[in-house]
Amino acid sequence: MPKIHTEARAIGHAECLVIGGGVIGSSIAYHVAKEGRSTIMLERLIPGEGASGAAVGMLAAESEEFTDSELARFARISRDAFPELVCDLERLSGISVEFRTEGFVTPFRTETEGQKRWKAAKTREDDCPIWWDAKELARRIPGLDEQAIGAIYRSKETQVAPVQLCRAYAGAAAVLGATVWSGTQAEQLVIQNGRVCGVRTDSGFFSCDQVIIAGGLDSMKLLAQVGFEYPLYPVKGEAVAVSLKDHPLEYTIYADDIYLVPKQNNELWIGATSLPHQYDEEVTVGGLEGLLARASAWLPRVREASFIRTWAGLRPQAASGHPFIGTVPGVEGVYAAVGHYRNGVLLSDATGRALAAMLNGAGAAELGISRFSSELLKEESL
Ligand SMILES: Cc1cc2nc3c(=O)[nH]c(=O)nc-3n(C[C@H](O)[C@H](O)[C@H](O)COP(=O)(O)OP(=O)(O)OC[C@H]3O[C@@H](n4cnc5c(N)ncnc54)[C@H](O)[C@@H]3O)c2cc1C
Image 1 (cartoon, rainbow, N blue to C red):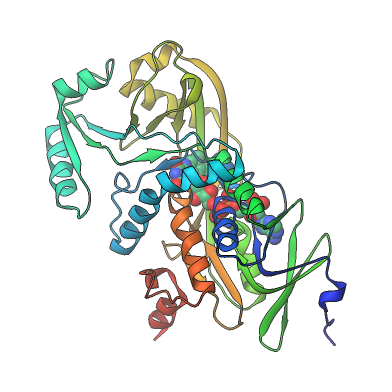
Image 2: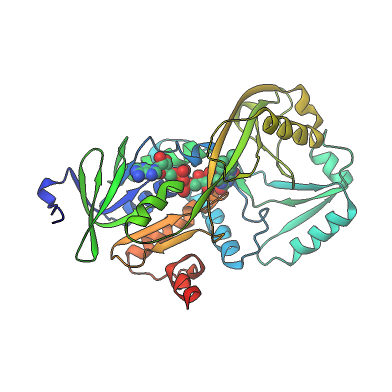
């Protein structure tokens, strides 16, 4: 006989329970609470300690050059919402997310590659790239590799400090009435008569009407409990921060082989390696060597920079190649937002908004994300 959990025995109740306090779960908690729905977010560590804490924070909606048109559109919507989002989050939470708007530069060393990519960039709907020739590039970014023949400049690309973003989402959600349970691990979804009624955790039982699974890589275990297989695997990424002292970089350099992202206090974040199926979070000497060699090839003064720190994280990649956002088939009241791979920070706002709209009855097609939902899975299995 399964245990019957009643609200009276629960240590907490909310209409909506969000599992995971990464950038995705925190954004969902914020947007759901903003809609006036009672919300609890469960995080086994503290918000921003998972993959989100390893991110560099680029909102690279154009520079990523997405080939999937639905993902490209979703990414642009998310990036373009940030100026207003940042104002709201900073006002509510009192946390600065270090939003920067100088734009991203993708430099090239050969005319053939530069012209090919520039032609493609110009044809993308809604993008407004600008071509900088070698002279303009040298003027804009003094000290860049002299072999650079030109670059695509994308003025609308922006960036944030990802841990602060997570904490600002969570803080703003709390101000709007949500409760954040840090240090609480969700262990078992509790289902009665085909619908979810709560979650058993290491702190006790929480009752709810809806559950949203946003546990990054570890979401698979919870999804499997309701019979939903959505394979995810890690893509390890290593990064390093250095200080350029008196010669800060103004623009983010988003080259094909490396990115250099200027942060506060003259920090420069350099990333990242891409190692599929590696589960450890160690930084290897080889990884670091490669990052610094590629970075100093583009910006030789990196060699004179002082070392600050290095870190690694595991990007949650879906075997399907795209995130899953929406209702989980088979059990009523269960939703998921998983598999954001290398773009979770970028897609966080649009994902949070989409889930909040879905709880209010919106369908994936109406939101323009049927490609990421169970509607598509049904079609694929036909
Ligand atoms: C080096 C590197 C650089 C990156 N740079 C960028 C970038 O510039 N821009 C960008 O958009 N993206 C970037 N990313 C990708 C980005 O970090 C991820 O896409 C994003 O963090 C995924 O967020 P998430 O909330 O899904 O997962 P996570 O951040 O991993 O959050 C999941 C959370 O759920 C919690 N959790 C899991 N299971 C449970 C449970 N059972 N109970 C309670 N809590 C649970 C975990 O503790 C964790 O905090 C980068 C990633 C790396 C590694």
